[in-house]
Length: 129
Image (cartoon, rainbow, N blue to C red; front, side):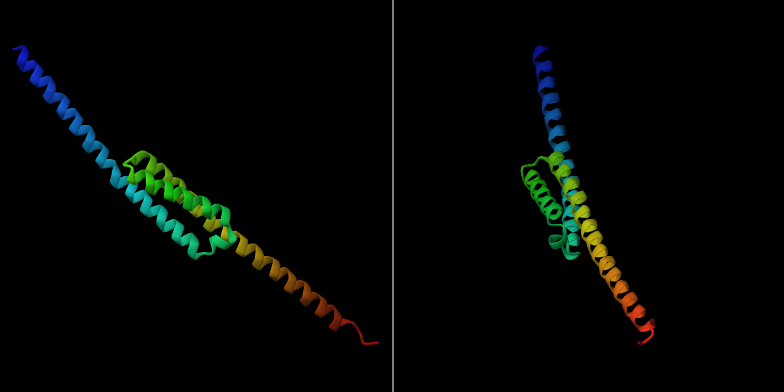
């Protein structure tokens, strides 16, 4: 009887180990999905001028994406997911920063054009002497 309980305990331990292993594998697709989302965000930010207009934010996003990919390769699903989420957020920040800087530049150019137009209007409205 003692021998039977020992085999049951061994079987339960083996079952638990297999279940935990499969549970660990089940989280990998989630981290891979998060990494794919982060890659997409980084690419979109790159296409929208973030490397030139938001280089610090872009560099951070790229570093975090690399960390996510390394963690996934090392089978550290939770870490990979966290790094991927950070990379996604920072890529979005880089893209938004680039858009803001483009808008600011456009507004500054518009203001300069308006000032020039005002000056021209004032010159043309003054009587010739």
